[in-house]
Length: 355
Ligand code: FES
Image (cartoon, rainbow, N blue to C red):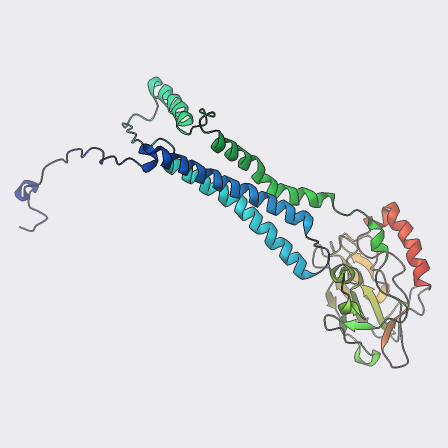
């Protein structure tokens, strides 16, 4: 007979195990030593205090650090806000755990198995347990644990601010749309390659090619590089001059089939960067607005409501492509043009471009 087939009694094993009962209850130091209890209370309060400090750091960093200039300052601000939010959350979490482990009542609870539907008695018992839990947490004894409850409530109330303030602060943002009417393009400024800033000769632009362009000197800006680049980026393309439908009033805005258009989509401002050489179509990847470069970058498909603004270009004595002026209309989404500030700015822009 195999070992498995042997009756249990052959090994002397009992048919059922006796209930071993609860293990020996070992009281925690805070249960028996008032000093230890006070120390634990201070530790929990300190953790909640760290959470409050984290919230202050996050909000302070959001307001104090200028995020509009360099990439480094944006990185630093994000890091400071992140550290603040981390401290705000971890302080509350660790404080709650430490509170539960050291100060809440530490006694074993036994609950007998019962039918799925609770009896009336057990329901009443559940309510009583909740009341006991509230009593155990010390919340009801505010006078006795005033510091702990006070810091805990303050930390809980303050922590959401670490997330909410930066989010809500951004909603106020900058609604001065006048700035969109201007870019840094000026008369005589060379068109340069993005990102290295090397100037482009007309001879480099072969038929069918497309260049991503930034204004000369953009990379030397000490302030506002990102904002200026976001407005001034241009696509430079060369078509067979016979394919180009020159727009009225723009007869001298191109050079031997070379044209330059704003890269900022007139729908909601994504970079338009997909060029289909055969059809002369520029496609915006966000919502598929399609512009016909051969026909003044007019919209042939999609939600954009107006053509891409054209940058008037010429060629200087050394053969480099230069701008004749700034754009003659605001770049980007059309709704900017409907705002009063922008129409004011457009007239400013036109004045400046003629300088
Ligand atoms: S942003 Fe270009 S189609 Fe919507």
